[in-house]
Amino acid sequence: KNKGLAKGGKKKGAKKPVDPFLKKEWYDVMAPGFVKTRNFCKTIATKSAGLKLASENLKGRVFETNIADVTDSGDQGHRKLKFIVEEVREKECLTNFHSLCLTRDKLCSMVRKWQTLIEAVCKAKTSDGYELRMFMIGFTKKSQNQVKKTSYASSQHVKKIRRKMVDAMNREISTNTLKELLAKKILPDIIPKEIISDCQSIYPLQDVHIRKIKVTKRPAYDPSKLMELHSESLDRDMSTGPRAMDVDGRVNLGGAEPPIMSSV
Image (tube, rainbow, N blue to C red):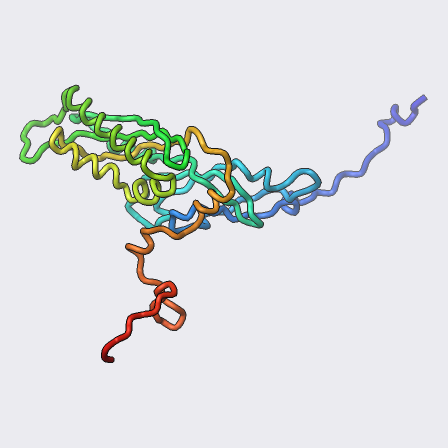
């Protein structure tokens, strides 16, 4: 019985090595419209086969990048952005904001002796339904012409400063959409500058930063809202950017006819 099994059974030929990358395809990862460099990285996924779709494999992936890389701003190298893939269109992965944080070396470089560290946390909802948790950090500093070595703030000063931080974060989150908040307040670092000026009468501050932003709850997925987030028509481009030029060098006024000149 089963003489073949006693001798080791039927020998199968060795499998030919197959390059696994033949079953893969590359996708461009697109950041939302509030950053300058939209296509900031690439990712790879297994090709669609049968019921296994490549898009399902890509959705939910989180990509981390530096703000300096996507905004061409060299002084923003200490902050990192994370984007999450929500939609796949042809060979492009359309992402949405996921989180923001400071780099570890920046945090460590700010913590020093002879000063008080002040932290504040705020949880609020944007006008378009995103629930955010925002963390802010700041440090006291010596006042002008101060001789004393230390600059410790009293508990009453800390409470007043923390209240101002929470109020400012709550106000900015609740009165803006996610796109407006990131483009006009977070990326230009407006909120910390306002805190420094508002708290000058309480206690001088330095190194005030938004330490972290988390999206704790998202509204129901809406493709039209995602497309709106990826549109690049922002007021900042109209107000601060250079005027658009046509191929032949003429100024493009967006379809408006230029005024008639009295003399040439």
